Amino acid sequence: MISWQSILDIFEGVTSLFAVHPKFALARLGLIALGFLLMYLGRKGVLEALIMIPMGLGMATINAAVMFFDPLNLHNGIGTLFVEPQAGATADAVRNAADLMTILQIDWLQPIYTLTFSNGLIACFVFMGIGSLLDIGFVLARPYTSMIIALCAELGTVLTIPIATAFGFTTKQAAAIAMVGGADGPMVLFTSLKLAPELFVPIAVVAYLYLGLTYGGYPYLVRALIPKDLRALPMLPPKNQREYTSFEKMIVAAISCVVLSFLLPVAAPLIFSLFLGIVIRESGLKAFQDLISGPVLYCSTLLLGLMLGILCDANTIMDPKILPLLLLGCAALLLSGIGGILGGYLMYFLSGKKVNPVVGIAGVSCVPTTAKVAQKIVSKDNPSAMIMPAALGANISGVVTTAIITGVVCSLLGKVAQ
Figure 1 (cartoon, helix red, strand yellow):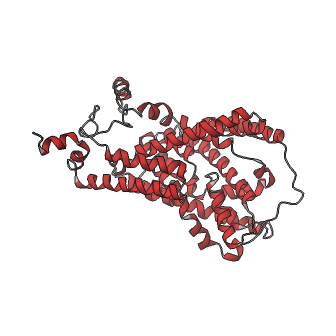
Figure 2 (cartoon, one colour):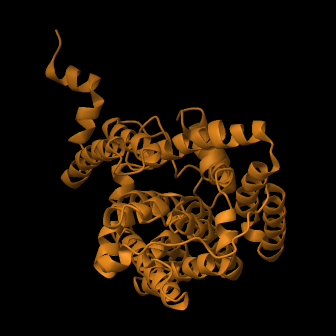
Figure 3 (cartoon, rainbow, N blue to C red):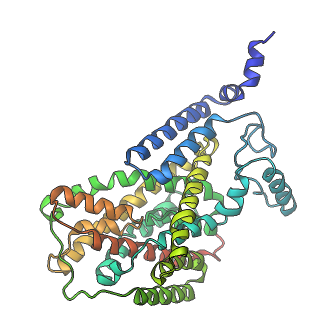
């Protein structure tokens, strides 16, 4: 005869929900609901579907699939068959190796996490794919405008470091958290791995949640800080603008890659990946470009979104360190958005009122999301105004400045004890 207890033994997800503190049970249910919401917003185009749909499904599933099983005994006997990010996290090298070999044979996504996610490889693949889509001609057309706006849009990165330190984080941890203000997910992953591996998982989760959610708020920030008459300002192409050949663009990209790698070798993997994509685009190697901009980029993005969702279990989100990270991540992106807009105003006045200040928000370096946001805002106020070329120039420059800041921060703090 089947008893109620035997039914509960079969459906362990239900049993495990009521076997923990109520706050963890509520957190699991809330994260399941949030996962469905992210999928819905991604499907509607409010958030980036390529990241949010797999992330949302992973988030909902990982919090539903909790069972009484934990081979490393890290979570009071409760775990999943997906990923154990704490495997090999002790100071004992022998135990680390044994734990990792054990968990690699059990959790089906553990090899992807260990061999591509937690070592930054997937970030390099994503950057390579992004590079293959970038046309640096937009930067070459307005080099000073693009770089000044991009530098101003790093305001959140700079100011968040002392703010995070005031919250009690170490200098390294504060710098890793502050990189969320650069609004470049692969850079955030890379910096946290280098400077604060103990916070890698929560920083990665917070970064991508806010990179998806905060962009929905940037249009409101722009409208609050820039009046309608300036938002509607049309932008004319630069006078005597020349067309750069693919060969010239390739040479510029190759020289930039070597110089930046020479100056900042700690960030060379990301710098190389980005400029390799650009060089392949401009070299005419269509087979390589199709490979990198298609299968490599989309497969990496899918796995990235999936891993981020799977890491959003209740044990991670309920960590006491998460709430300050949420607040600091939001503050970093808000300050970067404000900095970018201030940069837009600066170029508006320096150019004799020829630059639309809305271009400034594109200095926040998520390519091409913030450039699209800028153009969409302007088009609502003036359908005939085209600022996309200038916005893409600022956007691409934002990627480069974020890579430079990543290298500088990792170089300065990499050998610091705390």
